[in-house]
Image (cartoon, rainbow over all chains, first blue to last red):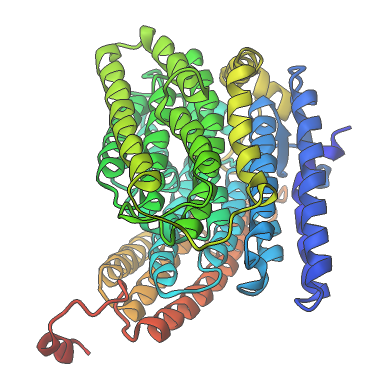
Amino acid sequence: MTETTIVPVLLPFATAVVMILLGERRLGVQRALGVLSCGISLAIASAAVLRASSGDIEVYRLGDWPAPFGIALVLDRLAALMLALTAVVAAVAIAAALTATPAWDTRGRNFHPLFQLQLMGLNGAFLTADLFNLFVFFEVLLIASYCLLVHGRGGERVRAGFHYVVVNLAASSLFVIGIALLYGVTGTLNLAHLALRVRQVSAADAPLVQAAGLVLLVVFALKAAVFPLSLWLPRAYDAAPAPIAALFALMTKVGIYTIVRVHSAVFGLDAAFGTLALGSWLLGGAAATAIVGGLGAFAAQSLGTMTAYLTLISVGTSLIAVGMASNAGLSAALYYLVHSTLVLAGLFLLGERTAIQRGHDRFQRTTAVAQPALLGTLFVVGAVSVAGLPPLSGFVGKLAILQASAASPAVPAIWSLLLATGFLATIALARAGSALFWKTTGDRAPAARTSVAHLAPTIVVLGCGVALALFAAPVLRFTDAAAAQLTDRHAYTARILRETDRPAVRPFPPERPR
Amino acid sequence: MELLAAGAIGLLTACGVYLMLRGRTFPLVLGLTLLSYAANLFVLAMGRLAVGAPPIVTEAASGYADPLPQALVLTAIVIGLATTAFTISLALVLFATSGTDHVDGSLDLPRRNRAEHS
């Protein structure tokens, strides 16, 4: 059944509409609906992963318009993986938002509808196979994220939020320009069709396609926070409410996902695409991001800022693997992407709990936390994972990337970069841990102890990271297959277009009847 | 007509980028709006400029006005309207919470300069 493909988009949308109609006064019902929707999404996403793991590509044509004329939603392995990741992070984030004291939905208006619309945008962006539809879903998830970022107000939050909004709006304009350029030259917006047509353009039009590819790369790099387009990230993530910051750990990954989907799968990162090797641009940007992230984490003065810079390291590391332009690299990048999203979400949540017990999350002498053993253990698990030390998931991810780099000409650079940023992160995290838990005034915090139920979301999401290390072999098999499916352009286009070649959507191309 | 369209898009982009680099929120919002106008015009131009041509292809038609970019532009305009409204309200909140319309929300200028800039 291909109708089930669209459910991850419709479910949060319908939930949000019902919530808005119910109004703020029935907060209890809104909460129940929100939790229910996240639970169902989790089940649907798990089912989607199972269906996709057979290797079949599910296509849902909206209005039954044949591709490329209508919009197609496509569920392949990569989309299923991202849906599952979104569902897990969303379930954890909403649980953390509700168990906070006071609950985050009482600190501002319309928390639950916005949260659901954010999920709709994320799921839609992962499913769509149409470039303009991707833009629309980007806008849906962005406008929800703008509101969630400034949720509960506060001067710093609004200030950081304003930069985030403006930078993303400028990127949206660029996105439209990139889409228009591609449409103008190739006459189509369907990703599968684009993959065919960008290889058929005349030599005179090739520079335009390359320009469009670079414009889109800038847009997606901004969403992914690739240096120098990453300057908005640390302040925004530090200022965001912790459950939202946990969800935002996924937002940068949307940028990485679109780079993989559009640049790796449609354009191709290798030099085969014209004379323009997008891969080398990507590698350079990714390397700079990882270095800036490492130095930023090293210099950070609070756990929130440090986690934001650790996000940058994870973006850089994932994109280095994508930039290798090989199936092994892509597979390693996907594994690392899943790992870093889960672990960083856990660190953002843990940061909030620690800050409540200590009074703040800055690395200054203050009262001791009430539960040093529990919080400390969780911190060590998160820190070891994110720094890439054995035996947790970060180590497996980095090892996969290092192995995949063997075929790349830039092996020495990649190895030294990954190991150096890992080293920087390790030192930074060691300093953070000792400052947070040992640099105390001696007296116990007056703050109440956090019950295990309130820490459950943090424990679950960090536990997912540990499980990712335990079940690394099946996950890596899945990402291997996802990477192979992604670069098999022939099967992808054949499945979506039903034919291997189609004329442009536009019946009169620039040179008239063809 | 191509020259006129290209000139208009270029001018709008230039003005938009200039205004976006200003330090106050109002010119910034204007700049964003101009940039989105430029992007919308560009989408329209990418469907090729055609005057008096039918948007639906018939056997007798000698030319053709591509309706798809027009549909895309409509979508982009609606989204642009919503985001602009949101940015303006956020700018107002920023002004209300920080007491300044500087994009960084802080009065880092010396008092003498601040009087000149306001």
